[in-house]
Image (cartoon, rainbow, N blue to C red; front, side, top):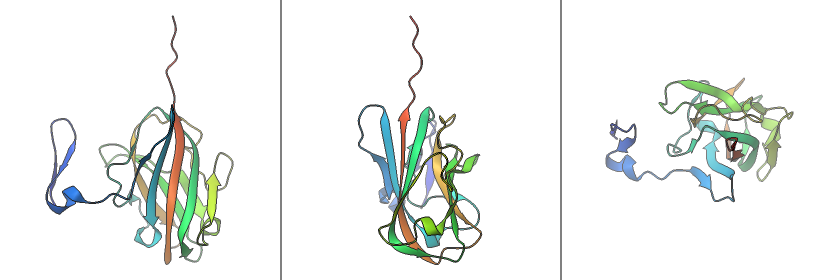
Length: 170
């Protein structure tokens, strides 16, 4: 359905998309720690990065230090040699930030079995370049596959981090 962007830069959705249920968002957390969670149907992915469906309200803010990414399999995943990329696109939803900055060519074997869980931190194969850094820009989620398409599967992805507080001098 239709949407427009008002003078404040906020998207206003009209019609049935106004009430569209999102499949992700920020989870309750304590203090400066932050967690975002979303579900991803792997067969919906294309070779080029695109906004993750039904996560339009999930914005990871600049100034957040990304510390860990968890991928949990909900439905067994298949696809010979398929790999997963997850990253960010800037708030205008057209300027690339880092399309594989969260997960970079994460191998299917890490999360192919239903119930399987894999943690990605610095040094683990498949972790993106933004993990272990403080975000310079806010971003919405994008995802795609590399090498080959997924033929089945659904995963839950949890991104963990914390807000970096500015240094205060007296």
